[in-house]
Image (cartoon, rainbow, N blue to C red):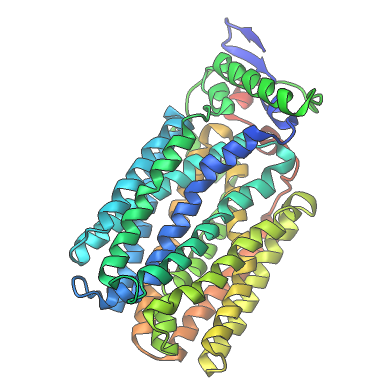
Amino acid sequence: MRDTPESGQFSTDVPARLDRLPWSGFHWRVVIALGITWILDGLEVTLVGSLAAAIHQSPSLALTETQIGLTASAYLIGAVVGALGFGWLADRIGRRRLFFITLIVYMLASIATGFAWNFWTFALCRMLTGAGIGGEYAAVNSAIQELIPARLRGRVDLFVNGTFWGGAAIGAVTALVVLDPAIIDPEIGWRAAFIVGGALSLIVLLLRRHLPESPRWLMLHGRPEEGEKIVADIERDVAAETGPLPPTTYGPIRLNRRGAASLSEIWRTMFDTHRDRAILGLTLMSCQAFCYNAVFFTYALVLTKFYAIPAHEIGWFMLPFALGNLAGPLLLGRFFDTIGRKVMITATYGLAGLLMAATGFAFAQGWLSAWEQTAAWTLIFFFASAAASAAYLTVGESFPLEMRAMAIALFYAIGTAVGGVVGPTLFGWLISSGERGDIFWGYLIAAALMLVAAGTEWRLGFAAEGRSLEDVSAPLSATAANR
């Protein structure tokens, strides 16, 4: 690293050194400590879906189908606000500090959900839980992309986001226990599920104590010496485990010492310099959010209302659905680094849309049993899960590092507000009508949006596989330094 104090400029090879690292225990620690939040989120959200019928029948809450849809929307509204607020902070005070703040918010709110006594307290706790998770999406996705080598970034990012469904599978099995009257009173069971799920966050807090700040964040916020020291420590540990490190494949970059991007810079970069990428990110995030949240948050209601599945058996149907969602990123993730982002994102969105339309029609005609309906959803979301994870990957790669967390937060917030908040409320209302034909129109809307996203990716998508983050989108400080 070479400093020029007079100009405030310096050269650094931190990105090249991070990208050349072989996979090691350090990378596993990053994936586990950060990705485990998605497991808890999946556990949380699946429990809500699986417990929807029990909460609907709860003597103390007795929420209607519409109110259950509204609480799902409250969770997503909280996620929107949390993503924006915590995303803004992550670009200013660092990724590491936010890891702890957002997790504590999530933990306390989830535990409080188990003590809710009416619709309003339940909705408030769900909103605060969502705020913690929304903040996690921004900080965690940023850190993972900045710490993982470029050649593996796509598959690792998809895998980490896909672990949500590992938590969903755990949530499905948990629901089988807490909703079985022979084991525990369902009124106590659904409350205990939230309390225990939140308490598990303590384990994550301990795991994150040993993670460093992102060297790239330090580098771009006028603290290159600290970033250099962290990279040197990482290299020493990796070399001790894997042997001599390979040479770097590209040279240093020249940067200006500066802080976080201003709101005017963020706006100009997103909607002027990278307008096509902004359109792409908004489309991918909004379309997958509507499709996912509309179906997932009302999954249990469809099974109980139209297939007469008892509430305590919903977990058996959630389990294959969750495993299919987990398998998608795991099995398809590597192709996003080999075949390429554009082809794979287009294909996964397109296949999910076509299958959604076909399944919706079969549901409307009454052709499917409960298990056949579940098998169809499992296949749809095998592809949709990889597509949704790729949306976060795309947004993170699209914009300069100084505004990465805020970009992820903003697009997550807009996508969730447009697609996620409307979806559960709309489907809750359609389900309450009791008519399959009404719900079919909701499925058609979801299918059409996924196809729109596929077409947008094919038109505006860009190659990011194997390229450094700084090459895909030059840092604002690098642009200024080279003027």
